[in-house]
Length: 489
Image 1: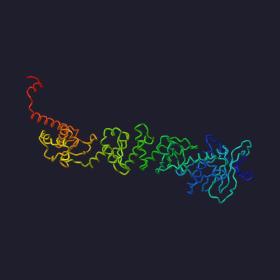
Image 2: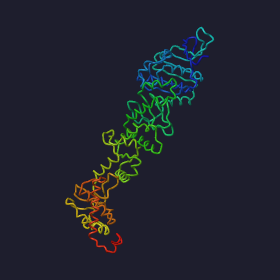
Image 3: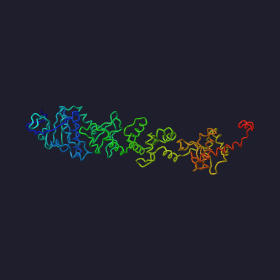
Image 4: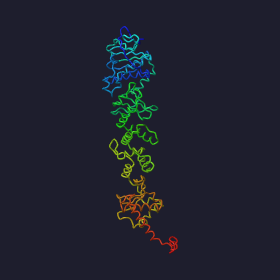
């Protein structure tokens, strides 16, 4: 049998010596190899983009503008030029062309290759001196256009469906958006409702159900080169996971950081993409996002136990991002990609307090009930011998700094910068609330000790005792009541 275009009287016959037919290949896989070869030639020669089009007579054509295909290309097992440009081109074996020809022949697709170096078609011919062994040969004839630039491959009998499937293996035909280019490769926006795609030098080699992005790897490692088998399908994740990870660790764009942060939050409910399960990537995502805007990174527990601080952050226009405890522990004290500290809860509370401005309320602006409580100041401080000498005033504020130990607004504080004790306005709801907060802050003003310290607890105990002693001394109780409390002598 001879294929279209082969004139057996003038053609030279070149035995393709194909030992193993790739039975799993469809015509689309063969066309993939032909397109890959054309793209490689474009990359190696820096010539115009390849063309893939359908002619008026229904034939599909693949066209490049390189050096032109020769029959010698059917003899190579590995292409040294392609191996030296592994990150730039798709192929490396040099056997893909023969595999493609055999597969197309098996599927009834006629192939005509034309370049300045000749015209090549396919024919089944008996091996020389072995008439009983018929093999696939390339029938090589003189070129009909010796001045032709590049190569055309005409495919007669190829369905549109198979061509579209072949084109779907290539990034250049997929219309996928590049989010960022790195020295490792490109991070691509994943198309909705389809699996993420892994490309090597623009050729699809794997798909991932649970990746947030698609990727095009251009800097290959040696294990990756070995993993790119002859079929270039079903390449395992272990071959490319390190390249994907390094690509993300080199990424800097806010959009990538934001998407990874969303995936981090989804981890809290058992979801989230596989990329953020790599701890280094999760931490890097926080660093990207932190440098791209106003963000506060908290754990789910902090979100509940420090709700006041979190609410303050939201009111300040800061977006709150929930991250796992293990990631939060690592980012404490870290800087983002711009060199600024990552805003965790402690950092935000310090920011809040440093920028805090009191909203003082003058006594004349208090309600009648509030003013009645506030006027008890002298009676309350008299219980402990009066205000310390350096305290100039007791004031009321609508707002209060955050209490770092709890993350909530403090009820009151001793403000050394203004030498005043400031009480939050809602403490004027009762004498007991106001008195308790005022006495607490008097202890701070007297001692300078911080809350939750042994020294402060001892000082507070002394004030409670002093207050009780003063109160007892000022109250006369009936003898009968004392007898009832402590028994008869």
